[in-house]
Image (cartoon, rainbow, N blue to C red; front, side):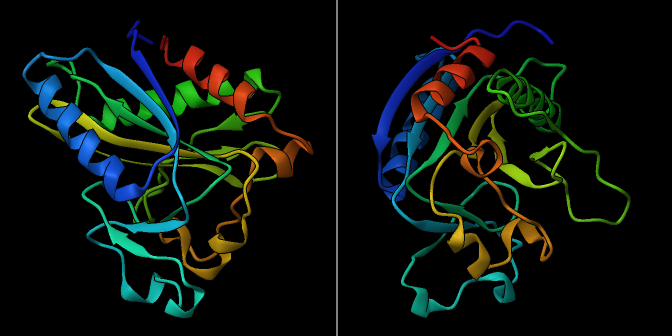
Length: 211
């Protein structure tokens, strides 16, 4: 894997629409070389985000009271909430690298971070004709712990990943996560019995060479 040091920005809870405005501004800055490659770590209040191809049948019942927001990233429905670490990646790709190549790199870096935290994990190749298996799964329990949805514009990436640390997993059961009705979403706390957001942030930052 090529060296790719990133500038690290850290926040706690940021509303999703506010984060999207800031991320869009950072992408514009990176396209003009006015900012370095950046990893922004944060969390969101409860919200479901959906891609352009997400079927209406995958959405939660409105009575659950959690807003649903359409987003410009790839992928299907994802839930965000407290206790989840979100990472937005604003990175200028090399000329020989596309967004799919970079998503594979992101998966491998996150697998490395989870390994350092004591959780064996893996990325998966998508079988022909199946829903895209983007993200990271636990090796031993076969559960999905990280969702990934990204895009690129004029050679710069945006959006990123969501790693479940110690938040409530129930909202995942109220919708069809990642376009996969049978997926079992998990968290570090569920898998290991305990989880420290500070330790997770540090491991993820190190895996992305971010400081």
